[in-house]
Image (cartoon, rainbow, N blue to C red; front, side, top):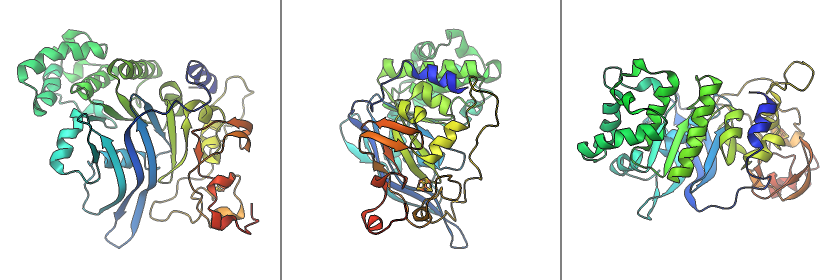
Length: 372
Ligand code: SF4
């Protein structure tokens, strides 16, 4: 997708200001996910992630491969249970019964109930995980029966679920090899919504699909949000997918969230140099043909993140302070601001972790710093 197509996708989306505050469905608070290796080293795959998901809201998580996106969402669901995992922080989820559960402390039994019943997960490449020797309808029924639905009732719901994802009733009788990639992904989404969850976490659900099928899947997810009043966490490396679907987006780099806010201003006028680099790597059909400005270098290892700002050795705007003081993810004061995208009007709800903006520099590092 080109910048022009992204711009067209954004034309009908929310204004520059952040989306209105929504009641929180899930709050991720200062979440660390580290892995201890046999030699005593520590891979800090996710560090201090803080993010909220409102009811009926679509929140995107973007970033390069290796930025920690998938580890973050797998930890929410407690499906990465490596014995060498060390977690700190909270993931507070509001259940249908009105209880607030910290998913990091929930028992196996409680997590089993919450998964699919209240939070469903569409993992990366899941369209290839359908059982090749079981008919599609039976696979949809199996998930519901495993979560306590009566088999007869579950069978009755198959046609309705297929219809919700735009598939004909006859698809229930087919085997996965008789479906296209887009149809398989729709079946996976039918399974994901079968228990009417309040949150769907989808990890790269459109990757490996052609752009037309991708667009139809995105439209379907947007429709399901409206019809079912469900919240969605969309993980994708593709900013075009976020531009088309999400309300707010969190950009991850090297295990940390480095910029968040309403999707439109982040895509149009990024404030963090990394986000700026991501957007600059998207081709434009208006401008003369030139080499695309990618982000130089590659993501460092989680066992050895650089000191200070983890992006400093790739950042064209790096300053002396960046090599030693980690910037804080801080709300940006609204108003006209000088940014890497030029002078822009910043609205509330924008957060960034970069010393170019004084809010991100800890107080004790500002005093007599003079390095900026
Ligand atoms: Fe670049 Fe410094 Fe901002 Fe990091 S803190 S993104 S190195 S300017």
